[in-house]
Length: 299
Image 1: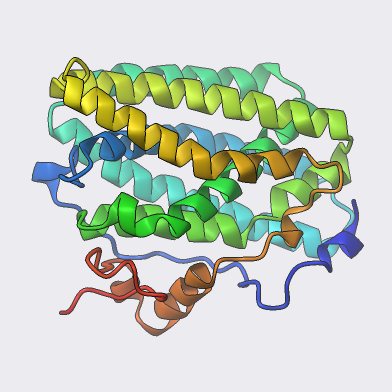
Image 2: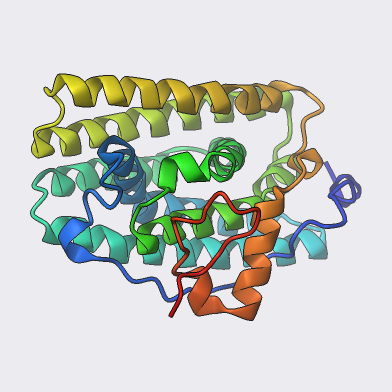
């Protein structure tokens, strides 16, 4: 797929920007940053632990492909993509340090498995495989971003501002750079079969590792064997997948292109908030997430 396909992008799509929001995390409650939904907090924490290993792998893959890009616009988008992903994993590493500081013993083993996984994929697999994985992850991340933003009040409401702001920023930017991995994959490799394989492999791998990580974290909390917590987790996962699966299924359409997925109005409003008040965008008021636009905590 060439540059012409990217012209289908909605006119109001936000332009990619490199941002450094000044997040702040409350160390004493990093594990359960959302006291009302500790199971969701640990799912998010499990995903965060992957970022310092997944994101550098994606960046390495994209940079390996750059020499094969003949479209200057796509090459420039690739560079911005790498800049955003670099900012993501650095911020997640800072947050992950707060989990380690709380004494979660399982963090070291979780991170070791993730480091080994992405080192193996990056060195043993072909560029075609790694680009298919990257595209599969980014298509999944776009679906997750839409789901999180749509259900933001239920999932993040009343949670600590720093962590909620971190996750929502991350996925606003996943929405911003939604086209890049797809276009690089199509430019260098292409093929529906590779694309579907990459989606299935990346989704299966990430969900498997995330499940193992939140299992370990909840076990340390003493919640894994708690019947109420397990029922809450089951209901939460059912809600998440009910909203996520339809968005994942559309990716299987042979004519799918992320440019045709309209951006959520809330994501566009977040970008405007950051431009006007970067500090405010890093400390969202989680008691006002039902508002159509993000609201910063009062100073």
